[in-house]
Amino acid sequence: MRRYGKHTDEDDIRSRPNRKGNRPRTHIRPKHEDAAEGMILTVDRGRLTVLVEDRVVMAMKARELGRKAAIVGDRVALVGDLTGTKDTLARIVRIEARTSVLRRTADDDDPYERVVVANADQLAIVTALADPEPRPRLIDRCLVAAFDGGLTPLLVLTKSDLAPPDKLLELYGDLDIPYVVTSREELENGTAVARVREQLDGKITAFVGHSGVGKTTLVNALVPEERRRSTGHVNAVTGRGRHTTTSALALPLADSDDGWVIDTPGVRSFGLHHVDPSRVIHAFPDLEPGTEGCPRACSHDEPDCALDAWVAEGHADPARLYSLRRLLATRERTEGD
Image (cartoon, rainbow, N blue to C red; front, side, top):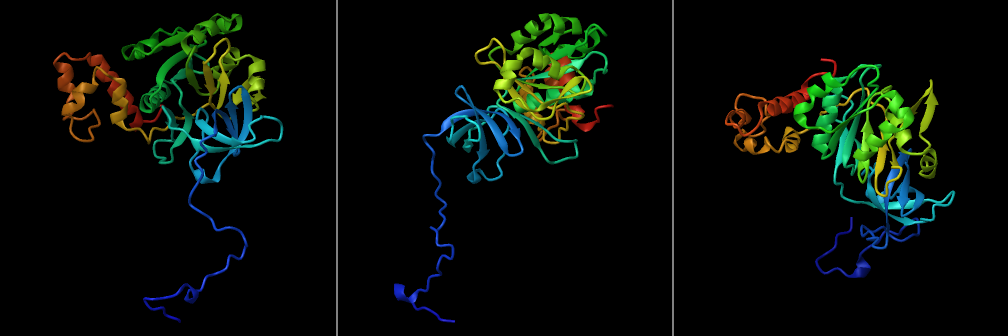
């Protein structure tokens, strides 16, 4: 092997030729300062439908983004062909910081976190009062995910013609969660849709619920057929008399300039492996100051928790502490318990 001294000349250095004959790669990436802004409407097998101004554009994620996922609701920067004409493809070069994130895991033992929706203002939890029976544990889990991700929850109770809502509403009364109660007749004549729309106007709302509760039926009533077609709605298929959503889809709310509805696939479970109790407490501003005396990594349901003394001193309603602990405890038990 040839060894070089301290005073080598450039002619002494042997360089390896580039076999491909192209320019060497560089780690310097363009800043894309002239990139257009858009919002992701849906994701389908690596292809993303993006709204850019008033046009729907098909795009793919740039290689320099690596494994960073782009999801429905993300604000992104795009370059390339932005005309939206058939067989054209733009490139997403940047994903902007998210204001909120709805996450879930397959179950509580699954460490793999799935990001469902980004930048939503609120989470509409759709639950039937009968046929199928309501699942309070699933509602609790959705509430925890909303509080953890920075979304405001909204309860939408359907099929009130089959069962009264009082018992279920009483369970969540101490949480001060807004709600709308609907019946099948009201959905048909449009009165229920009008009441739900009042809660959605000017906001980005993600809808969740398990199969059969009428979630997608409600979304279809909120967004006329022509608006679904204009945003590239290709993910709803008809099966046994009902529409089943197979991937998340953002749709513009009817008669609203800036309201959006995001329909998500029906869920059988809502794992909370990723949830940090210190983030959930932010949704309880009357209790949060009382955590200053809590031990490190307090679960807020242990003998040394300072919230007991905080409530005993009259700073907050005991029912609020009970509600917080019930929600946090849902991470440790199955939805059927």
